[in-house]
Image (tube, rainbow, N blue to C red; front, side):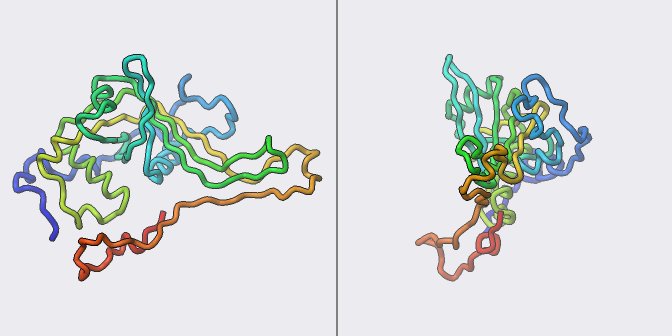
Length: 242
């Protein structure tokens, strides 16, 4: 049985509306800063907003870097992009959330690995990849509507359609979850695509060279042992593609 949002969901506090449907008026390209400009292999730099957002939307996990008490931490966590912001969340009691919500500068990275590049020389081995680096100050989300919208985005990012099938968060769970928003204003991507690039003299070597493509593939869903056997497997799990 699908749980419904509480009856007070009709209030502005719990409406799923404007946060998802505002139209971005941001420029098509991010202006690189001294901190986001790609210096090494600058030909791989990407500042196009659409291309960067495609990378962010495809990834599942981001790494959040921050410094607290003279110690630097890099924490992997789930995230979702909504318009021109990244949302990430965790327990309200976590060290990462406590420190970042106080206005600490963060660095968020997302990397997708698309292939192994096997050259004739070890030195020229590489990977085809797409990566994003975003910098800024993350803000704690207080507005209930924005908080619920972010949780909706997390769920639908993983498996579109799951939000309406599963029980949605109650007030206790919302209070126990902290969500932060990082506006995407200082950001860039770096992408490597294409074939092997060997030194001229090495092309004559009798060594196999080429690309080993990589992609994310889901196995068949495994039913929870306490799941009603009469329930059919949802299409979004049986036919998951990424």
